[in-house]
Image 1 (spheres, helix red, strand yellow):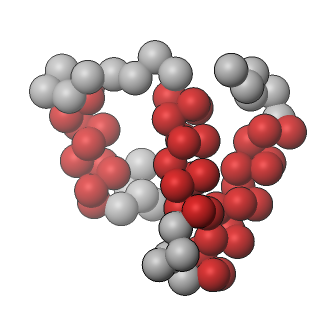
Image 2 (image 1 turned 60 degrees about the vertical axis):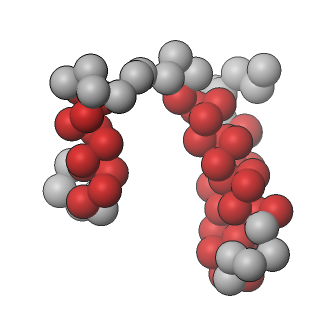
Length: 66
């Protein structure tokens, strides 16, 4: 857990304590965010490429696309 950014760890704690809601389709949420990153022209191209690669790998894995 320590390898992740402080903000991620903070949100994790908030979800765990029920301060924030749990998302049933967490992988779908990840795909949505990665897609938003890839489409955003203000995001540096290298980060957009990384997001696209991560999304494509997620899609090719066992993830059930809805």
